[in-house]
Length: 526
View (cartoon, rainbow, N blue to C red):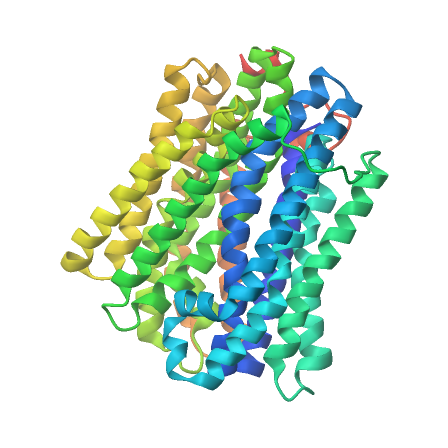
């Protein structure tokens, strides 16, 4: 299966989900504003999301997918199904116990996640109620993570990638159908969160059945396979905890400057889009493929796949990073500058976005390199490197903040991303698990050249478009669209002329029956 086509499937669904999420945020802002109901709902939504990030996504996938994919490759579908059912049973019991404990302890937990609410008893009680309603979302989303791992290992990426869309669809429907008529819209939205988790679980359960991998519940037992899963998953949980701690520290430092948290938040929302569409998509597709190849002792195929993943990632990420850096201000102006968000906010947010943009390739490369460890059942090394990068981030944030203000936090984030990606890549090369092939060495400079020329074209285009980037929103949006389209044409043209990537290669990569020059052909990688 083509790396390009699979990544395009995941990335396309991620793009739809992010756009719908943007619509969701606009509607929630319209109905809830920033008052006590909004505060209570966002606290309720954030709490299960935190546990989902810690347990379900990174930790579980990095440990479960390699083990499942290797059983699938080496022992067949029934052995893989049995392992998945064992993991499902233990996971379900653990989550049920966690959910019951959280429901009973919710008033005390609220003092931890939102201690400031204690000053307003009505808001506090509302947050407790909303969180109790929404918390089962964690249970179902953790089961969704398991089913996603099963489907991804079977090269069926569509359903798992589309599942997050359901959350936004359900919440948008809840707002439009029920929230505006309810006395308390937050109550309706909290039920929407819980129902969205159930909907995603049912969707993936049906998809797994269609794929011939229907899972049955077994009596929970700590089998050797489950013990191995837990051992590999614990470093992922620790790593996730380190990341959340890093975000908390960044927020605390930013709170020392008025408006800084908001400027960094809006900039983060923009650069997370290409990161999610490209980086996360490639990581999802790459991990099961590497696991199967390594189980089959196809080291050469695994090496070639990582080279093509690197190449494809840079094809999409380098121009995105340059564009975000060069035309950061027009992007922020068109998307956010209205109402209380004024021109000064645009300039500040654009500075943060420009700083984040230089770290985008590093964030994506980390998604390319990490599966090289996870597929070999090594979750400890990425955890150690994550801890080092977090330490760099915290120290640099503190130092730069007092020198240049909030932009220093964004620069520190970029610096730590390059440290993490550099350590991952260096260690893989040191172990002999990654070496740039001739094709990557030849094409990477050409991609850099194409991105630089595109950046120069965008800079000139931005000067010409400046008069049109003020005034009415349709005019500003059209000017920004013209800038983006023009930059894309310049990049594609230079790639075509230099051979960095031809349209024919890209098109063949998107088709099912193709020579797959971007995917897995060892000859093409040499």
